[in-house]
Length: 71
Image 1 (cartoon, one colour):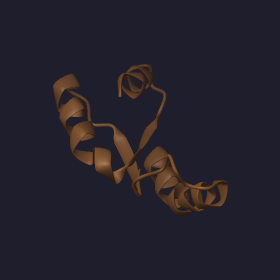
Image 2 (spheres, helix red, strand yellow; image 1 turned 45 degrees about the horizontal axis):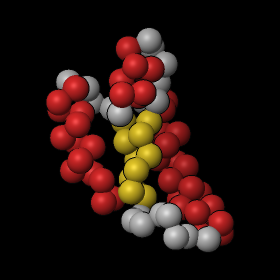
Image 3 (tube, helix red, strand yellow; image 1 turned 30 degrees about the vertical axis):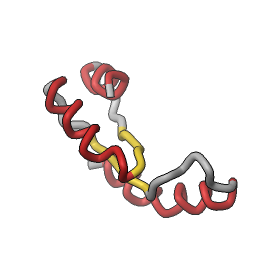
Image 4 (cartoon, helix red, strand yellow; image 1 turned 30 degrees about the horizontal axis):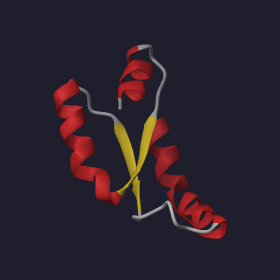
């Protein structure tokens, strides 16, 4: 969150990618920092997924990521 806030303060667009489990925590931290970062959420958990499953999550999030970066 701090990295995205820093980048955006410098005019560099960014998007946070997190699993659904962290949606509320991300919102709380954003409020405390006074920022409204773009975020894309993927299915939770991610740590035990195979390479193929991670690639599928990334493929599924790509359109949302591009939209968030370009809007």
